[in-house]
Image 1 (spheres, rainbow, N blue to C red):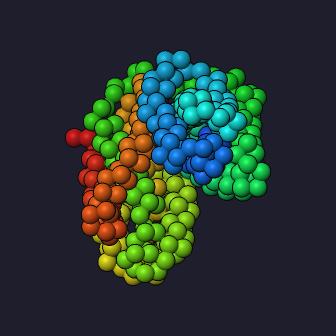
Image 2 (tube, one colour; image 1 turned 45 degrees about the vertical axis):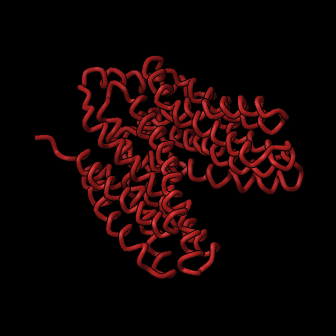
Image 3 (cartoon, helix red, strand yellow; image 1 turned 135 degrees about the horizontal axis):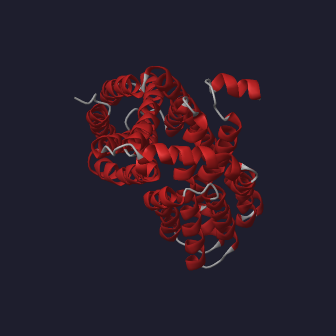
Length: 391
């Protein structure tokens, strides 16, 4: 395992064990976010809720995890305590477990709000800790860290649905063991290990000026890129079915391929960014995304699958590098920067799907793809401005 980590995260003074633990913990945090929507049919069937009520519960957890991340980042900037990471996972796991055991709507909502708050607490601090552990290889380390999140997203519904279908909603809550195990893993030594590197990062950041312009454009670019991803996840299968006549199954498979390619793209972009700088990686990625997004609505099923895979790959060459750029823009407020660019941006991007849904209702699913192309143009302009060389 050590040899493998040395290959995927090269460089001197990299604390690979910490990165590995944080990656496993990230899987637990993102499992919460993916597991909650998968509980909707069980809330309806076993808790006598309407689908609207169940949807509000999902919204409660999602809003808490995204909207609260900037505030959690501000607190982390002031406290600089590694114990915030396992605390976040305990809240996420505990909230998920409680939501499957409680009966009343209000109690379940509170449980999911607490779980979402836990996710919000975890992400900025885990992002900061991963960068601190990565030394001169932050891109590669964050690529591995992001892979943990992708695994968590995949595990959530793939575990919740069969457990809930076979044994009921209470059994589905057993997936909470994963974030709780992540909390134990982090609590077993990360505080003492991270104290020195976190303090050094704080001292270094305290003497560097804030660049709010870079932070703003980087956050805007990351938000637009995430909007493209959420839009395609939501409406590409519908487009495959209703416009191309290829069926929802092929569209869903194409989206899965896009997400898998994104996992590869995150690591590839991070590694290239470590070697050649974030600027060329972001520029190449945003320049590739726009034409791919413009061509997609005019293609047939086979080419559309290939284009979605390419789009997934280049999207992740935009998102995480821009999160790093945003954090570098606010070295004295690294937690706030991560909370905004990593958390709130995703929440806003998810909200854009409702606007794209209006386009679909009025003009059909192809309109949503054109809307994604508009977001890709925003990502191009904002990303290019974020990495523009200073005069």
